[in-house]
Length: 194
Length: 279
Ligand code: SF4
Ligand code: SF4
Ligand code: FES
Ligand code: FES
Image 1: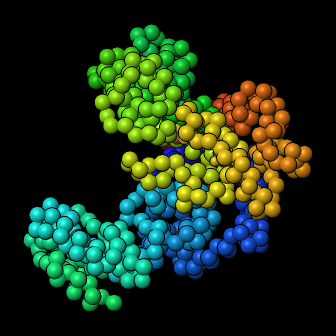
Image 2: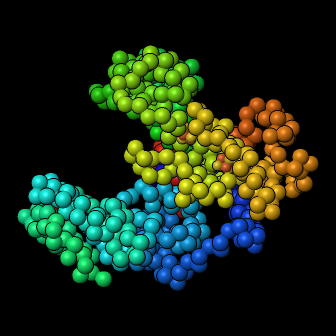
Image 3: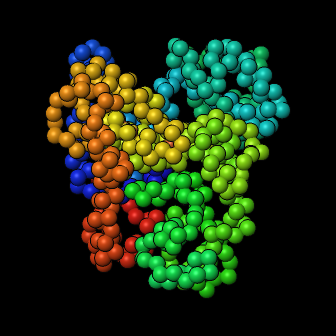
């Protein structure tokens, strides 16, 4: 698998039984902590949705990246309860799923806003004043690039070249292109998205 | 099978890596991320050697811990080129962990005492020994890697999820630089919070479930010392080594069914392709 530890060898039987013990203990620890009011019970995953995704990929652990992509497409980020559900179902350690989810920039572990603002910081957009547009967006949203507004309305991201340099400086909102941006007018464009 | 190591002809076994063969011949190769109880990983790149396959003209630089021996393979471990590349790698390590005595000593052993790169102060050299030990030896999978590039680090899921750690201490035992340390006080605190008292030797499967007479203060436990003295190493590492030795001959036997799919002999020859069957 990718992004972390490589080969995995068949585990001897003695170790397998210990893994079961560890799992049992882990469960009981969590339960007891919840019972003692020291932890909040984990949010329930949307099992039906995850099951559908798992089935689509033949429940194969080597399909984990495709599975995570599908999950992210559905939820726009990778929610923890769902990841734990997948970890359990496919018998992939959470450490490895976390390694993959943090390795690829395309995966997100934080919930996203309703609108995805994606500003180009490529060369062409940079020379046409992309930096100023960036400042303007950050000011009007009150978050820095990579962040999400507290009201979950916008997530703001920068990328390198959206592939339409002729319209520089460019941004996309939910995939729709807004070209020839003006740092003074960009606030209006954002306003129109509720 | 015969191979040539630094000019001398040697006998080597099918399934061995070049590093195994070189070590058997007493040749010194720094191999930081290799461990006899773990699968090779190829993270540190310090074990590089030059090899030339039979009938080929070109010498290639490969990591000896991952490179399987082949009939007629020629290996050079101490050429000018290897020394130069290794020194470069050591400089990089020294830049990452300038304050780790282990790294300083290692670099000094190969004549590197300063680095031209800007320094970090991170004792972890990302060799992955702790991560692999926790997965392969312990089976707990409590720690893994996260992020990538310069941000890569050893981490628990979400940075804090310690629920799978059984506090066995193998990670701290195998870590060459001491970058991973146990916080026993904190571990015990967390366990008490859950109302659970657990002996790590019970969790490791060495002791039956029993009540600890020391109030679960592992630091005062003699069992620890006893097991370590007996095993001469961390008891779990000792057990992993024993298990490995047990399975070793079977690995060479033809048509071995255990450990997943290895019907084709070609798979057997390349340890790097060996994988557990997906469950
Ligand atoms: S103490 Fe043991 S279980 Fe915990 S992280 Fe280290 S190796 Fe894994
Ligand atoms: S913490 Fe130690 S064993 Fe783990 S990767 Fe870092 S240097 Fe290697
Ligand atoms: S540089 Fe912005 S679209 Fe190409
Ligand atoms: S020992 Fe071979 S790469 Fe580290």
